[in-house]
Image (tube, one colour):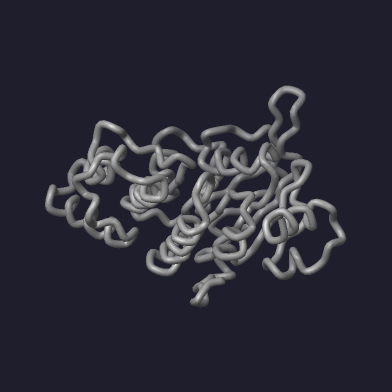
Length: 258
């Protein structure tokens, strides 16, 4: 559990979604999703593989278009944005991919500097180096600045991937299965890092996972997805405090009993 109380502004919705639908042919993935993310809050979206969790955050960042519904991010309707405005919005929304999405031909430092070179061409080298050093310190990997991604462990690549997202200082973080494929000790390190990012950088986050340990450690609110809808939302104890839904009980048993 968190060792700090997040500073959540319950009067400021940074993401508001209503009536969201998305299908791929006969596969109806999202069937009427409603979700609010408040400034400073971490929401965990929990569900089995293939339930549409990743589709949700891809729609938020407009990597996919919805079939119906509204997606408001930082006061803007995402599906309606022109290319220039969308690019500006994406600088404020960081997307952390499952595999870290690092460039194998670049050092860690070059990977972190790349978004700055691309999006802030007027920034001086001294300022870029300063930001790279700050982010590496924040993710606990200052010593890796000259290493290649192939020299890093899976957990280190995840950390650097989060760092590269942080380098642009986004207001919102979208994490796609941040602990997938990691051992329990490294999972704990990533969970702690997600909380540190929230505390230190004042981010608001949506965390996609099927890992209840991650959900319990990082989520201020849990939203459980089943059949393309959220069947329950609330704190971890509110969601898992009763076993009146088979999926809820199955998740709990799989993660904490077996």
